Structure formats: C-alpha cells, structure tokens
Length: 610
Image (cartoon, rainbow, N blue to C red; front, side):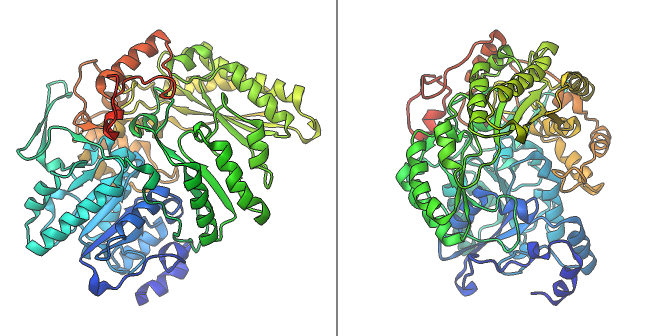
C-alpha cells in the first residue's frame, strides 16, 4: 500500500472501502498478464459489491490466465478530497496500481444519475474525459449496463459501449485487445475492429443529424460500422458462469448475503418497465442447478442468508421445489431464505410460511396504480381482489408489516386514480382488522410513490413526464386522503426523476451538459445529499437546452430516437402496438400464455410472431 494512503485512511469514513485484501479476491502473477482491465463501478463500495452483475463479470473476465480484471469504486467525498490533495490517482483494489496504466477501463452503469461520477472517476485517474482527446498511451474506456440501452448522452466520453449482457462479449473484447497489443495496432484500427464484434457500439463511427426543431433527423454510420447494434444475450443461461466462490467484503455492504439469480427476463410486459422489456427473452436455470449453486455460495462465503433474485421471482416455474431443496440445507444451519420480488396474483402462503421459518420479515407488493383502469393501461395484470386476498392471507399468517409501491404521473392518470391509492390502502388496513389473529401487535402499512419516468425501449417511450408542480399537486391530493394512523405515506422527490428522464431520453448534445454539471461539483448524484436540480437546469440553459424538451414533451409517433440504432429485442412496431393498447385499456397476455410477437425471441435463436 502507498505510504500516503496509510496516513490518509484513518481520516476518512469506512476506510475498508479502499484497502482491498478481502477474502476471495483474485490475485494473479503480473508477469503472465497480457491485458489488464479496471472494472469501475460509479458508486460506493457498499453499492458496487452488492451488484451481482459485477461479481459475475469479475469472474468471467478473470477466467483467461492472461487477463486480469481488478475492481475500482467511486470514493466518497472525504476520500476524494484526500486523494486530490495528496496527488494520488484513482487505483484498483487488487494491486493498488493507478488505473491509467491499464489497457481497459470498464464502467458498469445501471442508473443515469451515475454519469457525473463516471467523469469524476476518469478525472481522478488522470484519463482525458473525452474519447477524442485520449492518446495512444491512454486506456480504452468503455461502458455497459442497463442505462447504456441509450448510449448517446455518454457517447463523447466512451470509446465504445457493450450493449446487453457482457459475459461473452467482454471476453471477445479482451481477445481483440490482446491481439491488437501484440500486433501494435493504432487506436483507430482497434475501434474499427471492435465495431465488428456483435453487441459493441463505437460512437465515434456514428454522426447525429438534427432537425431545426432540435429533434433527431438521422444517425449516420461510417463504413465498417453496423447500421444498428443488436444487444448480446447469454443463450445457454443454464450453463453460464455463476460466482459460487466470490469475494467476501471486509465491511458491511447493502446486500450482505448470497444472491441467487433464477432467470433473466420477465414474462409480464408491464408497459412502464424498461427492465422487463430490455432483458427479454426469458431464460431459466433449473432448480437442481440453482440448489447446488446456493449450497456452494453459502458454504464458500460464510453468509447466513440467501436471496432468490430476478425481476419477478414468484414467476419462477420450479419455485416450490427450489425452496424445498434450499431449505433442506438452510434450516438445520439456521440460515434464512428470502423472496424479495413478489406478485399479489401468485402469492403463496404455504411458500412464505416455509421460506420464512427462520426469520419472518415484512412483505412488499407493487400494485403501481390505484385503480383497475390504470393498472390495465400499464398492463399490470393484478386485480384489486388478488391484492386484498393476498393481504388477508398474509395477515392471517401473522404478518403485520406491509409495503405498497405506486407511481404518480402514469399516462392517462386522473385524480380518481390517485384517490384510488388511498382507498386501496384503507381496504388493506380493513383486511388486517378482519384477519389478524393478534391485533395487539398493531400493523404498519407503508405506501410509497415515485414519479413516473418514460424510458427508452418501452411502450411509454413516446409519453410526456408530468411537471414537478403537477407531481407535487398529486402528492398533496394523496396525502389529504391518507388519514388512517396505521398507514404511512412516503414519496420520492420529483426533481431527480425529471433529470433521470432528461438523461434516459437524451441525445449526444447532453455530453456538454453532463461535463458542466461535473465541473460545477456534480458527482455521486444517486445520493440525495449530492444531487442539485438547480445545477442541472443551469447547465442545460448554458448550452441552449431544456429539461422540458427531453422530459415533458410527448414524442411524435414517427420521431427518430437517439436510441433507435440500438436493438434491445422488442421492435419499435411492437412497442407502438402496446402503446395503442394502453390507450384502449387493453391487457396483453404474459409470455407464458401467448407470445406477443415482440421480436426478442429471435435473439435466442427462436421464432417470433412479429
């Protein structure tokens, strides 16, 4: 360790974030390494080490003996100040080496509010922010993750993007960089060859053209670059890599337990949900494989809890058998098994009673909307009677802590829909009064609302976001109807949601804005104490742009989107059909009942009804 760090670390919060040396970290003989990757997570250690995707890619990128992938996390403000004052560049945890010396600097970006932190980490590393300013000696900088399904806002800062799932494509990138280093290719030749890898988007090979009104007219691609980049997926998910022996953090993290990934994708097709659209097609792991993986993870890590993780865990077809197999291992060892993602229409009291024998926690459901009409609009195929029946069952079984999540500002929402949230909470409270066997314990029902953000690659990508003033009016209306003492109402701020909408639906011109916000102090903006709405609005105005143009404007049906050159599976024609169905209040079946012809099945080599 750098002697200067030894003096600095006692002065900062949670110094274990910055030391490395954890049980299970990968150490390699540097004399045998040909390609080095700094795997950067633009948030704190506690958040990044809770990310299952980062653990998976850390394992796959370290699989070749000649490749070394090391971890880098964003420093908290106190440690950043110490690093800058001491002139210590950002370094990787495994070796302590400055990441500017690596061949590749890879960012995992799952949330738009991390964009300024990416720039801050590049600055701390001494790497030029803009791709065009990097020299032959600088690392290749790239990004992947959910927010990269619209790569354009960060296009100026990335040499390339990986679109989709990274287990296979990342290692193809490593192979190419290995070849390039051996042959002495220049930077431009490397980028041109990278553009030939399926799932790789090289933004410098694309030129946006704009209409007079500021909308995008076209995206021109250079010779050698594909017109559209199709996301990569892992087709053989059953046998894909899973980190059964992984790093055990030396300090507490957010999800301090084993996370077991059951499947990828979602059968439901909620029209507001980006993850449910872009993670298609659905692919399952067998219960037998998962039981063995779960046992190995618990044995190798020393954790006492395992969580079953997917977008809608209770939709897993072999869930009962999986839980039985895991509980046979967990119960004798006083380990707990939890299901964080439940649906009110397939909740099983039998399952929950078995799963939570060791520790009974609260239950969480997401009706999303307060009336059946609006739930049909968003294709949230959960009926009120399903929710109430589920709550009655849970209360009868001894649960007395329930959380309900909703959104305000959904397309076609009326005041009647908003009041419906309060009425639904009252009905849930009434169900507790009728069914709870032990009313002396009381009940706590928490209602939370967030502001709807229209996301790319969803049926609502054309819709406008409500203004901050309108969102707050709807919050006030709902608050006025929340009168029961046992019902607590929490709401998320709308300012962050507005900027999230700007960035998620933005174009390449936002690069100047993102850099200016960073220069004005923006970083770690997923944390409320660091976020400043005024700073973003000021930067937008400085470059002649506005939040209203990106967030509050309904898009024309034929408008060219900045993300149209990225194929995430569901076709634009399918999304438009779903949007029209939403306006008619027509439900679409889930994928298990009938294929909707979205187009994603083709990515896995299947047929589609498109």
